[in-house]
Picture (cartoon, rainbow, N blue to C red):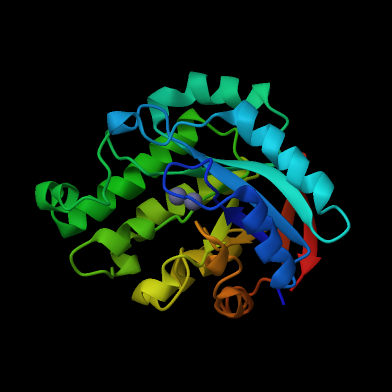
Length: 263
Ligand SMILES: [Zn+2]
Ligand SMILES: [Zn+2]
């Protein structure tokens, strides 16, 4: 089984109410050896949500880590919402804190959240997805102080069709993956969408396989759980997706450095 959940949120994230301690206890119950909290920080999110009290978060994490140290490893991570112009602020944040792991994610495209129907109403299905991928490439070119890119194609969840033809986006996907690989960055396999009917983790098999073919080696596995019940959810499917794409190991990040574990 996969023994590390590298993408989880607790009440230090705007969209979770679960105490950090309960997330860590759930990891123990599910037989994990490692859980990484990756609380949201999205500078300039409309309405001011998704900001992070990192000092308070760190203090609570260290308390939980110490209390459960003989049962589970608790890592200190963050999920940074990237937009290219935020690079200076994100770099400052990343340098200021002793994080184990940073996920870079696209939650906003030109300040708009594709989660809300207005996004696809404005851009249309195909262009909405293309714009999302294009913004990821711009983000990576502007800011690379992260370890893996989060849920690379999760925008599809909010598109009218809830699916997309990867081949239509082959060129931009290749550019993204090459940009990640040349910078030594990984891709995360995110199982959050499976329960809501996606059937597979993000990114899909096409992107995972292509990352591998182009020479990518760094993959982490995360549930993106926002409550205790979802910790390590659908990790059997993540494992199957990795094996199918030719990966024999996945990474756990400590002090921003990848250590590999056999699947
Ligand atoms: Zn995210
Ligand atoms: Zn997340």
